[in-house]
Length: 219
Figure (tube, rainbow, N blue to C red):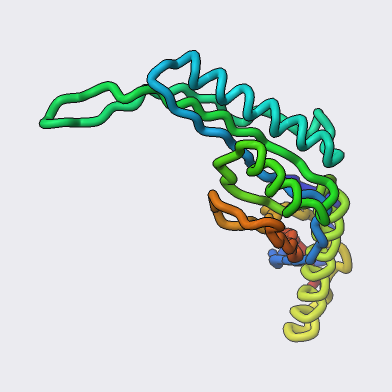
């Protein structure tokens, strides 16, 4: 959140008042990357076996991702958990084994391959596909555009107020407060089983900017 002071508040030779006006803008953007969480969950009474099976499958998945052109820098471990599992039999806790969970966060830059990549990962042992998020790799230019349009929106509102109240409004706000800038990332619901080839169709995402603009007016 940013605060912009554009005018000093030194006393002038005329009477003046101040008016706060909200400005908002929403723009739609085509996503250019997808972020998907791919995971392997293994269970065994022997922890070492559960870990080894998990590691083999995860390594196989990573190698498959690399074949599809996903770079190593776009693959990272999101979660790695080891959890003992218990059953309750006749009120007693009975050890069942260990569950090992390894979740990878994968950034896919070729959106035409998202479905193929997911299916390939599943074929190599991925049994968790938690979510798919479509977004933009560098959102800053879009945030800046939304901010500019929000300021223009506030200025246009100020002109309308000026005409309605018959006052002499300063053309430029003396202060701007950026309230929020949000990105509505498109997310596909969680799922675990996918059919080949899974159709994944990205839609547009929205970026919204909200500001408060303060104007002086003479009377």
